[in-house]
Image (cartoon, rainbow, N blue to C red; front, side):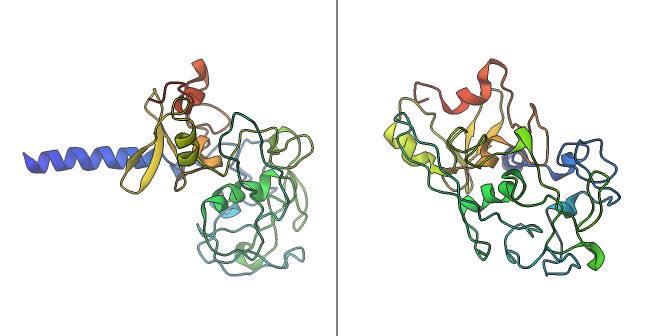
Length: 255
C-alpha cells in the first residue's frame, strides 16, 4: 500500500513538472524554423529544428563573419547571442513591485532568472538574427532563411517583436522580471498565492495548468511555453477564454 501511494505521488509530481515544457511539441509550431516547417519564417535548406537555439557542443565554430563573440556557458546549451539592447520597464501605480531592467551583457555567462527572458529576446527584440548561431552546423555558417543566402542575418519584424521601446516596448507589455513573492506580500488581496512542488514555484490555473515562476520572479516563460503552441496561441500555457490565464494570478481575493 505504501509503495502504491509512493507511485501515485511520484506520478503526480512528474505530471506537474511535465507541464513546464515538452520539447517534442515544438515540431510544426512557429518556433520550428527548419526548412520542412510550414511557418512563415523558416530555413532555406537547413532541416534541423533544435539547432536554432541549442547545440550539444557549445564551442564557437562558424564561418559566418558576423559572429564575433557569444555567451559561451549560457544554459541550456544556448546557441545564440543575448541581445544587449536597453529596455525601459513597465511602470504603474497598481504594480507594487517595480520590474528591474532585463539588459544583460553578452559576456554574462552565469545563470539568473532574468536570463530566461533574455533567451527569448535573442530573437524577439529584432536586434539579433534568428539564424545567427554561435556554433554553426558542421562548421558552416548561419543558415539562410526564407529563400535567402547563408550568413545573412534574418531579423524579426512586426507584431512578434517585444522589448524595444518604440512600437513594442516592455512599457506597453505585461511586466516581467519582477519578484512575484514581493508583489504578493504587497498586494495579498489582489494576487493568488503561488504553490511549491520540490524546488519549483508556480501559480496553478483553474483549468489545471501551471504557470512557473523562476525562483520567485515572473518571466516570459511563466505564461509562454516556447516548445509548444500549448492550449492557446501564441505559445500560451493556458487559454485566454474566460480570461483563465489572467485570473490564475489576478484573483482579486488572494486565494
